[in-house]
Amino acid sequence: MSPTENDAGAPAGRAAAPKLDEEQFGSLFQACAADLHGYVISLLGDRAAAQDITSLAFERLYRSRARLDSRRGSARAWLFAIARNAALDELRRRRRERAVLSTEEPAEALSAVDLLVDAERRATVRAALRSLPLRDREIVLLKFHGQLSNAELARAMGISESNAGTRLHRALTRLRENCAGAAPEREVA
Amino acid sequence: MRVIPFPADQPLPGEREWLAELESALSGEAQGAAAAGVRELREDVRSLAPEMDPEFAAQLAGRLAAGSVHGAGPQRRRRTRLARLRTHRRGALGGALASAAVLVAVLLLAGSGGPSTAVPAQRNRASETAGSNAASSGVKGFSSSPGEGAKLGEEAQAAPSAQTSAPSASASAPAGAAAPGRVQQLGASVTLSTAAEDVQAVADQVGALSVRLGGYVQSSQVQTQAHGNSEGTLALRLPSTRLGAALAAIGRLAPVRAENQSLQDITGSYEAARRQLSDAVAERSALLRALAAATEEGQIDSLRERLAQARSAITRAQGELDAVSRRAGTAEVEVTILGDAHASNTGEGLTVHRALRDAGRVLLVTLAAILILAAALIPLALLAACLLAASRAARRRQRERALDPS
Image (cartoon, rainbow over all chains, first blue to last red; front, side):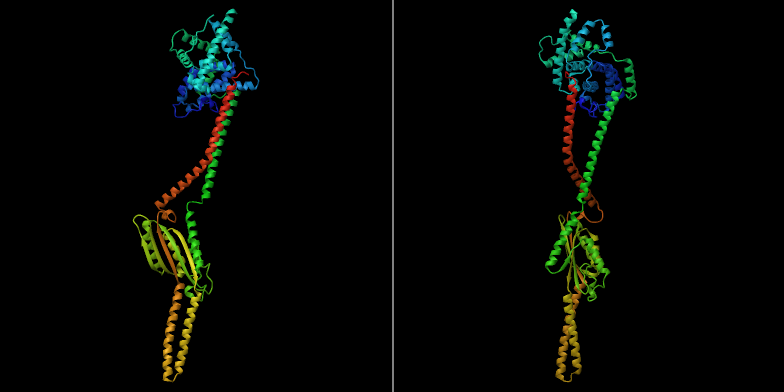
């Protein structure tokens, strides 16, 4: 079973694997919380939802830490798989409620980015990323924020590794093309 | 404009190689402009995300450190409730399956009738055969279970004066077939089952029992084998009045596998012998009276000769009457002792061997019940697994559909 297919969205590994103790869980939180939050907020564009899903992912991982199977993926991968499921459920819920998915970055994020020295380059990347289909954008965000290997990426998405590689290849190729296409406009502008 | 380098700027040698290059670039192993460009792109993408609110991070860290993350928003609480509901649903389903399994097991065990049903059935078959044989030979036979036989015999003992015309046989008639004024001969056959090495001991006990009850062993044959089945056959002659007690006592020596009792009405024979005796006695009395009145030598000699014949007739008639009376007063009991592998399966008393066999039976019945349960539950489990897999696949598709363009 894939870690994405648990009813509660929690990892469903076997108990034979080494368990995640409190200290390891604390270290995992310190290492992953910002990345996880960044992945979710980049996907949903909603800080409240991102905080909610971040809390939920850590809670579910904490509850199921005794069943964590490190042979089937790192704890980081499990955490991002849980968050991905919750984020996709949130997207579905918004779609059902006909809420318009915000593609705007939070104002505070824009201002933070604008303050950076190489804001132009990042604006190009942002524009390229925003122009990607949501499916491609999601895999890029999962790859870069989660810092997952291709195998872990595949497990988190519930697909084969080769399929994940193909999709990642396609998404990054489009991102590169969009970056190349967006740069002149930016330059012209 | 700053062109972002990419490992696929050149024609890709292949997707697998491209992915390997990407991995090594992201991990920092690969050096060069292309690898640095990939790492830069990653950092650019990551930096686009707003930073986590420090206050939220601190609260979440505190909750996790306390082992509880309760207090999140209503959306999370709703999900938690749904998760609990799913957990309860799974628990209820498991409980229902377990209850069904227990119910089926109980029904199966109740329907099996216990481990000792084979013996009464065998006993009944033996009784029916004996009954049909008795009917064809004109003997009023009847059959019953060992317990019933003992009961009938005891009832006969309790009413010894029911048949006044033949005191010697009256008390021996089984209550169910006894009729007042009738003389009846009783018989029984018992088949005992015991371990092969115990056949001789049981035969000795049967013989001692017959003597103790006032009877005797008319014939006995015991065959024992070191390996294989052993068998013993004893023909007993017991007082009819003690037949019931004898059968009950024999039944306590070893498990009874079959028992048959028979009854034969010999009233006609008894009456004929009694009339013959009476006639002979009357004739002798008449001859004695005639002798007292005789005066002539020739007549006296003739009467004395006839008196001698009359005495002989009386003796013969008395002998016949005694024989019939003995038949009525003595019950023929044939005891067969079988020593085989099935000997210790049934009966009273507790031995290690019997306990092991009973335990084996219980395990066998349990295994059978488990097999039947498995036959019923495995298809259900497979169906449930298929439904679960389909449900998960559908849920995954629905999730992934959230990424499709709306």
